[in-house]
Image (cartoon, rainbow, N blue to C red; front, side, top):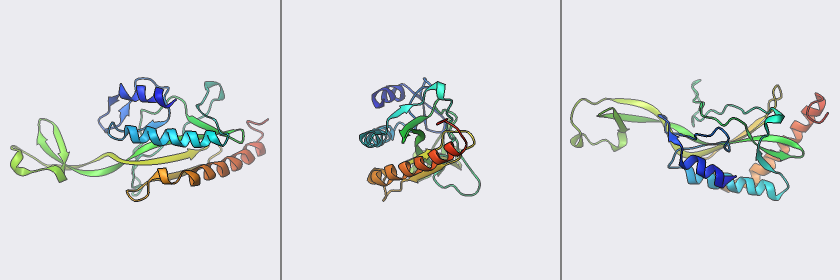
Length: 206
């Protein structure tokens, strides 16, 4: 699954917001820039392997199950009511089957607000990289949301009307690949809650 995803992303176009947009709509639920692609896929691969080692199969959901994908806000700082939800999401969610119930999994590279400087020809660069002596002509600054290089994992309920989600966002000093045991345990606990909710409503297991 990871090898196929790598092929999809290596031929993808880069959107104006810096994220890759695969041509296919059937790909694992990873949102990333070119710069962070290998890191994102390595994390996804290790997470999937750890889940499968303890008996939890990870797949792209079958169309016959009619599962939903939760829209994920990629903004690293989720304050002020702003959000940035990517429109190039996969057609079907990536799910891990835990205790017989699917748990949605989204791995995204977060975006950060960056001060940009116009340098001509329709181009902007990061203001921290701007040197006045290297550019001529009109210039101005503006803010833009760009991929940060840091990852966020969201596990969620892929069922209409049964909300549940849990997220982990890494920082420079606290990377997600140091938290696999915590993540797997939390997903298993979430699956148990979801099993209870589904059975109470007579869904999925009926």
